[in-house]
Amino acid sequence: MNKKILWLADFFDKDHQGGAQQTNKIMIDRGREKGLDIDIVKCEDFDQSVINDDTIIIINNITLLSDKNLQFIIDNAKYVRYCHDYSCINRLNNFPEFYDNSLLNIFVSPLHHIEYKRAYKYNVKNIFYQNSPVDTKKFYIKDIDRKHNEVMWVGQLVSHKGINNVAEYAKENPLVKLKVYGFGTERLLNRFNGLDNVEFLGEIDHDKIPEEYNKFGSFIHLPEWKEPFGRTILEAYLCGCDLIVNDNLGCMSFGWDYGDYESIKKECKNSPNKFWKAILNVIN
Image (cartoon, rainbow, N blue to C red; front, side, top):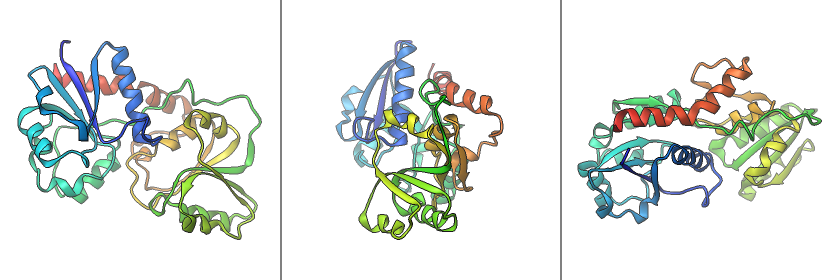
């Protein structure tokens, strides 16, 4: 394959430790392992002159891409839309052809697509559901002591991520010890004031998190919004945590059997290969 792949996004893994950035890194690394020529470009640095007949763009979020450059891509480029979130929805009413002109429109879960359709009010075609990958060589059950009466939560302490629901869970289950990892405003941290069974441990480096998952009996995530995927759920599950979740998680919308550990592990492990197979099928 002689095509140049331009991976276009607002942020990359060196900017944030978020799920989208970690997912992009894994997918890009696997593509390069397959011998694909992939350049990483931020939306704000996009240069129209790099586009030619041999260029394929994989385009993530577009909030930092100018209207001029977005229209140029729609009119002149061959591209695959790989959507991680909902941040671009408000712009798309001005660019209805964005999805029509895409070779493939990838959503990270059936729930993600359903919410997109509801919010965008547009019937997106050429759809492919691609679950986020998790490195099963890092995230697995280790032979260490696990505190079965302790529950872990990790992420950004914001309302839509369900921090209020987590605080309510702690109130209703005073015998459970809840350890909270992440970052957030003092106002939201105050939700845990007066709860003796909650300990806030601050932000944790992603490389250290598999060890932490393995220390806990359960992992909790109760978002208020319709989370496109919920990558931490799969990470914690693969490390042996029981899951305390609700119906607002894209990773729970695939219909997988979470009673079958090996099948979930396979879905996570094979994700990058499925991703590139789907893309190569439409660009070759």
